[in-house]
Image (cartoon, rainbow, N blue to C red; front, side, top):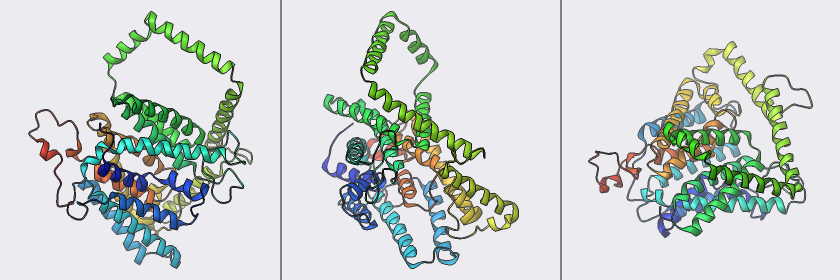
Length: 444
């Protein structure tokens, strides 16, 4: 896999900045004081669009996943129709202007994506390794310079004036860490020794950030992704061979040495043990509160207000489903109720066609992601497949179906996932030549 090319690395940076750049944007806005308003975020996205421009931007349009694209268009058209004709809630001029701007950002990003060459598949992972490392370092710097931060709290860049360590968005840093782990692991295939060491360093730092961010959804996504990786990359014969090799005298001796080293290290670093115990206690307490709240057994001391909000929202949805199910045929209107569960809100707001288009679109993306994991033809598409798991679980745990972060992800998946000519290894017996594998199309 190649590491750098000015044109394609620049375009990859642009895609990353829009698609996954929130950790860096938050750091520059909040920690370095580049402006806490949405104007800085807009300028950051515009910088990403500029970096994606090339001589082919207005001349060539590359192929995409047409079935997923059609469903995305249907849901977007329904949303726009409801926005103008069935909107009793979002009528304030500022909110209307903001949503129009968001739709324009999504449209511009998608237009830029279908104009980006397929060659970015060679350079996106190195860019991701470098920028996720930068995002993690920025987070660590922010925590280290925040006098209100205490080890054991959720790791995040603090919003506002910094008078509290808890007002931030740890989800974006947990996703950044997730991406850093998988991108670094896939890039270990490189023959460049220095780059391989850098990937190992980023992998370890990303693991630490993932733990410190304490985002349950990303934890679950990580364990699912690891399980899927072993499932698609293991066979019974390889498992038996690994077990036999593990119990060889040489490996047992090495394992004993490693265990002795770990025991000695922790015995001489009691403070590190206390930090780890603090994070374990904080994570386990938060999980217990969420479970107790979800099943209705929480009291004032064990109440999880985030989970309580979703429980209350779902109860509200059930009351509508039981008392006036006919209203769900067309839905209750544009952004009618903040459910904090995008898949449910798509049904509540936009009715059957909203649930069908939004739900089926995500199921097809998941299907193509699993297929990329299984076939292992393209590390770039494999990475996108694993990363999408964090957003697929998010459909049930946070956000809204019209949120731009979701649609930036959907745009990337529509452009690159399930598109045959992106495969690095053609199918055996295929008559497709090298030119056909990378040839652009003039139609979407």
